[in-house]
Length: 168
Image (tube, rainbow, N blue to C red; front, top):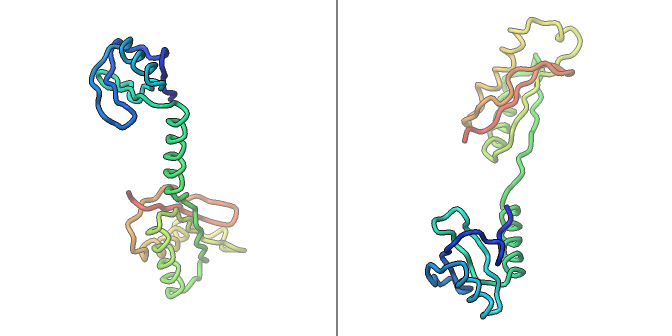
């Protein structure tokens, strides 16, 4: 969304705020533009959907600079979510499953998605689907964090996998 400045503003009257964030009041568009010109500033519409729309008196270059700083700060705060992977086999022991579930729980807590993969080799590829799902469920039952299944059981080139993520 682009802000409208000076003569681009369509509203008949505006709530005007000066550069020190003091409310000047509701002025007609003509009065507001004159005030901006007298002070050597721009009139920037910052909230077009308000009734009446809100406009601020300030230098447009400075406004763009502050907006870009806000955006950078917001981006720096947002951490990208990764898809981490946990791989098990049909014969993986209970203790190893507990360790993998503990790691998966830690990753869920950090907000990552987790792909739990049942690696199949040789004859295991042709085992009963129900049995293989049961093997995959063993890990899911051990995970301590709250999660939801984002991708149900799917067959991949290496075997069966499921993707889970933290519930909001």
